[in-house]
Image (cartoon, rainbow, N blue to C red):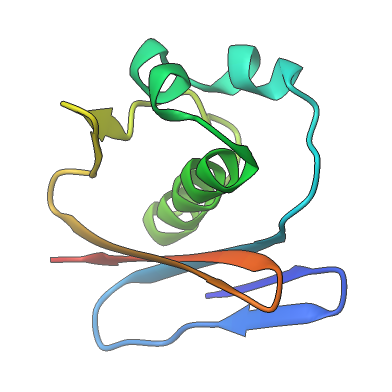
Length: 105
């Protein structure tokens, strides 16, 4: 899986299915939250980093499953924690970017 944002690239490879996404941390259009995020996700978001963490997890998951980016409106927050059943999620900030990696368990 591969992703890029501005001049940063993230490549992921694994023996099991993998999806990756990276986004430069920046201000974003707040209307995206209403359009693509569930109620639980909206309540989880406290700052730009939280938004991009969920956004990159959603994109990485959809790349892994092969669904493409057509349906970002699925829930990733349960009881205040980010998770997708049956998948491992790793998110981190590096050099001003939020990166997420999703792999099948």
